[in-house]
Structures are given as C-alpha cells and as structure tokens.
Length: 303
Ligand SMILES: [Zn+2]
Image 1: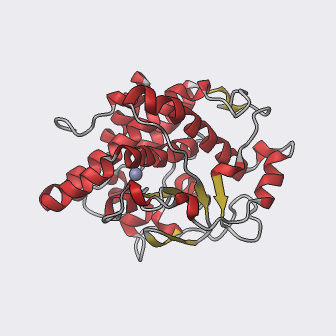
Image 2: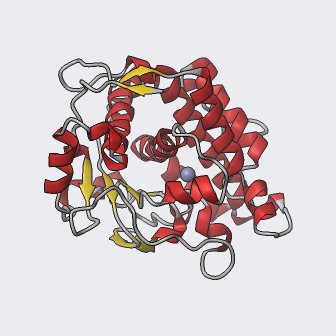
C-alpha cells in the first residue's frame, strides 16, 4: 500500500480528543485478556450491538458533540512528513472511506451519505452511548453517529493478536464506517428491534450485523484506489494483493473463535457476537471480490 504524499489530509473529519496535542497515539498499553476486558476487551465495536436504545437518526447528534482540539493534528498533517505520523495516516484513511461512501451509498443502496467524524481518544472517552475505555477497542456509537478509536489499539492488534500489517488499520476503520452506513440505512435499528422481539436470536443477529460491516469494508478496499481528496488528488497510489491479504488476516485474527482461543476460553458459537474467523474472512472477501455493497446482504439465509 502506498499513500499519495500529495493528497491533502482533511483533519475536519476527525476530532482529536487525546489532550496534550496528541502525538501519534503512544500512550498507556491497553490491558486485554482476563480482568475487565476479556472477550469484550478486544471485540471491535461491540457497543454497536449493545446500545442505541430508542436513538434513531432523528436524534443524531454527531455535529453537536464537543470537539477536541485539532490544532496540533492540523499542523502535523500539513507538514511534509505527515505520512510518517500514525494519526495523519489514519485521518487519510477516514477521508478515503468517506469519499467512497459519498458515491457508493447513493449508487448502490439508494441512500445519501452523511459524513461523520472519527474521534481519537486516549484511555477513556464519554460518548452518547456512555463512557468507554480503550479496552473495548474501536467502536461506533449509533446515538451520536461517531467512530471512536484509541490509536494504541493497533499495537494490541499487532503485538497481542498478531495482525501487524499496515492495512489492518484502514480495514478496522472501514469496518466501523460500515456500522455508520448501517445506521444511515436503519439496519442496526431494525436489528435492535428484532433482538428485542426474539432474544434467542440476538447473537446471531449481532453476528450478521458485524459480518455486513466486514463486507462493506471489503467493498471499500476494492474501490479505495479510486478515492480522492477534496481537490481530486488520489489518496492511494497503490493497494496490493498483500494489503488485501493483511486485511483478510486481520479479519481472521479478530474472529470470535480466535479471540476465545487466545483467551483460553471455550469456543461457543452461540455466544459469538462478531462471527467466526472463517465467516469474517469470507464476508470481507465477498465485499472485496464484488466491490459492491449491495452484495453484502448477510441477513438472508445461512451465514
Ligand atoms: Zn463491528
């Protein structure tokens, strides 16, 4: 993967709430495995399945949320070595993902896209879905329609889950934006209602929601080299087969069964909330091979 050093990094799409001017997200290591975190501690976006009660699109408050201080981020991302900075690269990934959906959502699914910000935080953050700490991993909050990430999560991903490829990062963000797309389409609200009517199937429904977000991430990956900044400069110079393999590898490493095994817990498919490694791999690949979000109907038939 090569990013285009001439692409302008649009920092207005992120909200830097790390305090102290950030600095690339080198903070306190995230504790995972056992204790408070456990399985939830490394499940990506588990909150999306657990929250959102009664909060629909009509009360989206993303634009009203208090903003952090982007001053330092802006300066560093305008500098020549911006692409050496983890937070600037991640901002550019967000730019690419949203540029994709601005075109793809109306085209493929007939819904206008509404951009939303990614909040960079360190250790803990207050959201419209409640307070969260880094242990939950990156997540999307439907109630304020914001993506939240402590960038130190990538170290956990690399060191503790063994997914060290750079392309794991845009994959994670694209998965979270997949949840935003589901929010815009009303999918997660439908799922939430169905879970209330049919609690016995709540986990299966959660898995289907997660696999769809993986599939949407794959659709973005297929089209990412076509995305451009506000002035038409391409964001990526190239994305290779190896990058895609890294994304698939990440999807595999964060499958519920893989996480259970790492935590030395019994693997119980009835308790899966995100899907098995094989399922996550397959649905990301489905999105990637078709390049079409309309091919991401995970709710029909067997998973
Ligand atoms: Zn998710």
